[in-house]
Length: 497
Image 1 (cartoon, rainbow, N blue to C red):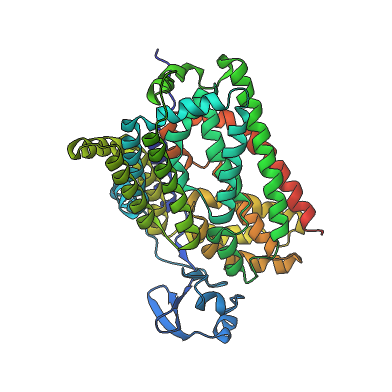
Image 2 (image 1 turned 180 degrees about the vertical axis):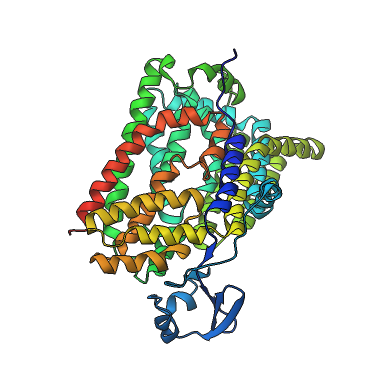
């Protein structure tokens, strides 16, 4: 009998999609009324089942709807998505998703996620062009020589910088671009691909989990909860520092074990295949010429420009994709790659990440099934009812787990914030704690589950690194348990301060 293999990321997501489709036959369909701000007409639009109503954009309107959010949060653009209106949940006609909807969901998901999919493909094209120039090989050879005996600095720098990006502006999907570049560097430092994966993915996860100025979680969630985003900021900084420190120590311990004895690697059986895939062959006499230095500089600047644009210029996937396309063209020109070879190399590079793009689309398809089956609001309604009458210490920890569970179905941090905060944040008033603690529970719950959430980014990341989900779980679960205990202690203490 052949040894059973762990299923691929695509298969795991399709299984989850099938289970979600079955849930739409079991879980009652329901909807909260929602409220959206119309900037052009300076009015609110209230959506209630099949009816819409135009309301005055005044604080009195918000108060009447029991939405405890200042009017300026809508008018200045902080809240741009429709928000749920408290105490308006009602059952609606069931819309169970059958076999046709299940089959269509990956396609619908790919269409909905077209923006991030094109970003991934164009990043792949850029990397293909970079590999063709030989700049990576030269840069890796130089870095490996420079960091001899001090390779742990790589772990500190990468994890720390990615965590800073996560906490400040929500660096997450963009990190997919980092793996093909960083893995050869970590391999050259005598680590394995798991270390590179951990530094980037865990760095991003702990950063977004402890978001401080991240507009897509901390700020929008605080706005939707009706509080200033700086409320509770000190606690999040403390959580960020100690959480990141725990993660770095955990990664370094594993990395040193692998460095001392490669057979201790969780992916030792894949060592040769991964090294061959990522071209980990350092040639002693390879020279980092001036032309290759310029190419590496342009490549690095693509990420600097992308990060600046997202954090300062309100760029999104369209602009980010253009940056990588322009970067690829400039590098092709400097490297004197002829037009035919450039196009062929770019397309081949994009095709290398096509599997990752499909995974992103299938994951989005799960959200499509949830929305079309109208069970997202029902999940939220029952979750909010669970906490009635709880002691505040128990309450805040239950909220942590509720948000972790909800993030399986709603992996978007901004989507989770506008959907849940108007419903969940008033529950804090009833148990006598600050609403900022609900924001914290939301961030920490989503963040902890993000380490392993199959409907999030992890499967797409693993597909690039060619590491199985089972191997990742074996590596990361002890860290998740440590962080969960630490988070529960912090949350419990915080309700009494």
